[in-house]
Length: 532
Ligand code: NAP
Image (cartoon, rainbow, N blue to C red; front, side, top):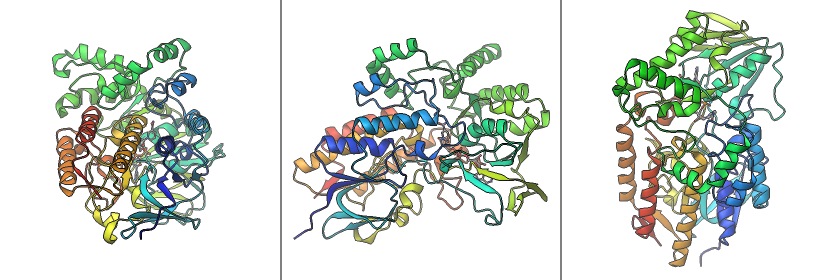
């Protein structure tokens, strides 16, 4: 006689993914226990409280679309919402849909084991709780396991240290202090201007200069907001048709970059630069198709940097090399201008890496820099980190870390063979962070709920992807990536930012094609999965 589960499903994470998953399970009469390591909902937006933190997808798109009442009721104050506003929105959703009751907060999953005999998942936490469930749904986020480089002497530094992805809730007062920021990705680029405003001296340690385009953030006026709300369904549909599941707020220029004269190109780039943010990559239809075409945009940005940054040496160091859009394009609020402040200094660690942390600060290239505080804006063990940190063991004792030792393999980015009834939301193998994450989250939560319901309606208790389906999906993900310029740089999409991590391009490129694939899988009654 097999044991009965405590609940139908365990949902790990109370960010936007876990919240919507919980809502759908509740709505469909499935019992669920949520587990969240933070003290409340919000996920990324709960942890990332660093100064300047703001979303790079416009507010009207970076929000749930499952409830028209919700999207009509909520008003956004800015074109791009800042972290406090997004966290307020997450809390509003939790209140409206009563999502907190089934979550256990301040509890971190430290093991999830599949019990072969009973076909159940046993999920335990660092607070001593264990829950047995039929389904395990990992809504742990793709950028939530922070990455702090293991510099020699880390423990020696006598000042304060912070990571942008785990910022103190009460904020930090840098007034008059000597501060270092290590890292110039999206987080560093956002945090540097406000820290520079407050700190006595700010020194930025840059290993790779990143491309950033001004966000051109501004208040969201009532007229714009009301117009979108009046046609929200069409607006959302437009977003879902875009390769990145957002873009209804800006236009894609289908022209070839090669068909424009140098003057036309400059004027067009200028227009997209002034419009701001991510849309810059939509300035030409084939901007991301060839290195040669892409270089036109790179040079435009470099010229902007040379124009903005007064010290020519600093300007050259800030000029990025390589393909624009290969790493996630950053968007900023006055990043390059910050380097004109007399209290801001740039240290290039591309050729001479940071050697060590000392009692007083940071040592590189034979020079010791003294600091009161060091901010690590050094990113994440993206996509796989938050899953592997949960110590997941599937059927027949197979450990996820062993199965994925050469890189993550799965079917649709949702299920990995050998781990029955386990689902990963917005993980590797799905569009994930290459697309509007909230749209991806809704898509995954709806697919998982429908799949569970279908399986139950057929009298099955067990769902698993066929090995052949997984193999062919991995090939599809790789083939799509190989046709792009993405694999040409050392990005976190490839795991290249974490020493020792397998170099595999993890996200699926192309949201609309992915959506079509999911629809086909449903229409074919999940033929590439086995049920038992
Ligand atoms: P990131 O893009 O991975 O940037 C990390 C930075 O730390 C890079 O400049 C990296 O240099 C540097 N770094 C890492 N290890 C280092 C070392 N040992 N020595 C010196 N420098 C080192 O991380 P992130 O900025 O947190 O952003 C991650 C992702 O989160 C973004 O791409 C984006 O998708 C998301 N995000 C979005 C927003 C937004 O919506 N606006 C804001 C923040 C984050 P290298 O480049 O040389 O590796």
